[in-house]
Structure formats: C-alpha cells, structure tokens
Image (tube, rainbow, N blue to C red; front, top):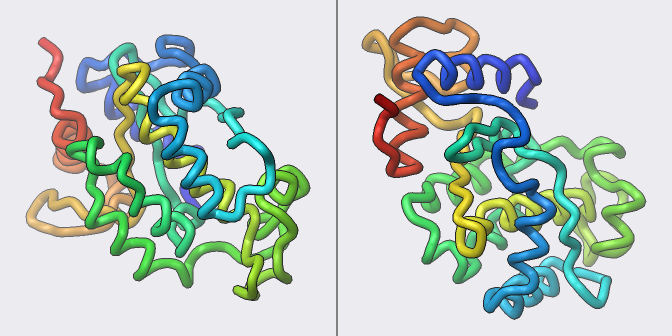
Length: 219
C-alpha cells in the first residue's frame, strides 16, 4: 500500500516544481461531495450507490481530506486497495465520459490486473461504517452475494472525489502506484521510481500530473 512517505515525496516534487502545496487551499472533499449529491448529477450518484449495494436511503457524502492539496488542484495517490471489481464497476459510470483527461482505460485495466493485490484481511475487507452503508460483507476473501463492504465503500468515495470537478471546479488528478513512467532510459512503476528518486523521476511525475490535469506549468 502507498505509504505516507510516498505521498510526502510527491508533495515535495510538486513544491519544488513551483506549486504551492498545503492543506486548506481547496474546498473540503465532504463539502464537494454534498454539492455533488445536491446537483443535477444526483440521480447518477444514487444509481451508482445502488449498483454497489447501497443500503441507506441516500448515498453517503462524508469524505476524508485530499491526499495532496495545492491552490489549484488535488492529487490522490492510489495504492493496492483501490483496484478491484467494485472500482471497475464505478468506472463504467456515465460520469467518466465527462471527466477528461482521466486515465479511464488504464484504471479499468489496473482493476482487472491487480485485484489479486487488493488486501482481503479483516480491516481492509469490512468495517462497521462500511457495512452500515453497503450491507454485511461475506467472510474475508469470499465473493458471494455480498462481497466486501469496505471495497465497495472505497470505490464509491473514489468516484465522488473524481466527479467533484463537475460541480465545484476542483480538479482532481489520480496517480497509481501501478502507473509507469520513463526516466533515465528506464521504464518503472511509480512506486519503483519513487524508491529510486532522481531529477528525471521528479520531472516525469510532474509531467504525468500536468498531462492528467491539462495544466500549464507555473511561471
């Protein structure tokens, strides 16, 4: 799973590239999620929630803070637990047709390729709050009629964060530990590259973020 150290490194890379990094510069994710649930996209959000087995009358809109925050955009760093069949389901939502340049095909493939790496131990599989929102889970690692409430909860909140730009104009870029970048003539995953950080790696990380945001470099 992505460590706090990896998030700190990416934040340092952004700061060195001229972005102002720090919490409190953007609307909180919970405020954004509530605005999304109150918007013209509410029906799509509700349908997505039901498709995941949502058990409450209304979708949840309580989100934790951004992984990395600048004055212009947020960055979410996705580790093993973010890629599985439920995230794949949320990526089929019509919301993603409006979220460009989100790396949709790549993220769908990660869900297929890396579900086996998604943690299935008790704490990662289900929690009381997740079961309140998505119903009781099957036993850890069992994909019966109920599956994993925690996996469903995480997939739903990831989509809520992705879609906030539709109502709050807060750009959110995702970087996965499985993303690949080329630096110094070698192609490595983001995790591998961050563990052997160089100037070229820093530049490749910034370029990836800019590409996914469509942003110009700050002067």
